[in-house]
Amino acid sequence: MASVAKPGWLWGAFSRLGLSVALATLAIDQAHKWWMLAVYRIGEKGRVTVLPFLDLVLVKNLGISYGLGAGSIGQGTLAAFALAAAAGLAVWLARGAVNRVMAVSIGLIIGGAIGNAIDRLHFGGVADFFLLHAYGYSWYVFNIADAAIVAGVCGLLYDSIGPSRNGAANEP
View 1 (cartoon, rainbow, N blue to C red):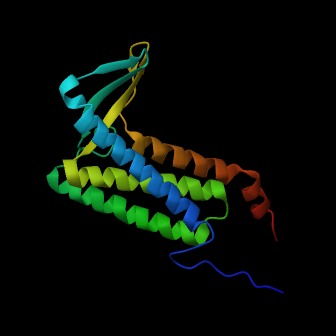
View 2: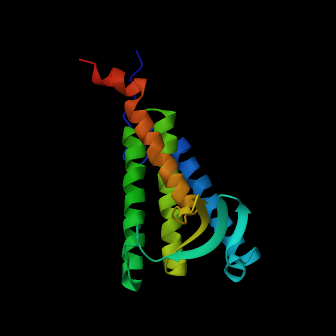
């Protein structure tokens, strides 16, 4: 009878998947930001219409969200918080991830958090580019890291109400 190994603090059954997703998310986010700033030079172009509901524009987000501000000292604090959160999520990935959906979701959040932390340290704020709008209303300007974080949270919410969780709640 084989025994099942307990996950370690830093490595578990789904760590490879989750950290691979985090690394891919981080690489795609940072490559896109580099391309938008250094090659496409969005800062010089201003607002560029891509689709009737999507524009590209450079916004340096100095705050957290919804306009909550953070000065220059705050940027380092926010970056440190994001990196600490990513470390905590990596431990959760190693010790608590029980399926692929959860691992991918945690990986998306880790990659997005680190991508935005790098921006705060390198640019003094987060570089955002995508502006969704329709019928006179605009949504917040965001980047790939932000989209990955939202997708990761949605994945965790989905996983929390999925059949695997319902079965676990009913076990004796």
